[in-house]
Length: 112
Length: 113
Image (cartoon, rainbow over all chains, first blue to last red; front, side, top):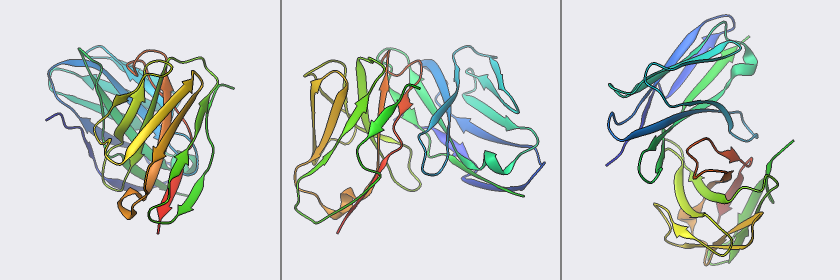
């Protein structure tokens, strides 16, 4: 059974703090790993599509790394702002059929 | 601005009612998907479609059906709504089976009473 785990389930930080969370996924049959940001009352928005082991992607203050051999990805937010408050979802895409498995998300609260 | 539009943000229906959730995308994507999201669980795939009039069951299709008569529109149908179908429903589209990323609608929160 394919399983994608995200930790922590929720996180409360102060404005200006840097933070990171983890997505764990199967280390075999890997095709891609996605990160999405889902703000309340909005659509989930794609942050990163990662395909290669060792990939590092950056978008403003947010960055992500990928380790396909051990099956994990980290999402980092530098200098968190209240507008970063959202649920961050990761999705594992398997090769051969492109089955997508979503994690349950990490809910980030940034207090001003 | 490209987007996926879901017809309702909030919906309250009675047990046994037939419910239609509508989704329209303007990106000319071949692939469309319906997911539901429940607390503590990842998004779970209900149905998807790779072409007009084509549909495939996802992981949790029981109690649902779909319709895709036009490329841009994908409807989710609850034949006889039940309380365990109370959930957030997300529609998505993609150009390549989802491997390169999904574009999501903003969701419909359905409550069945």
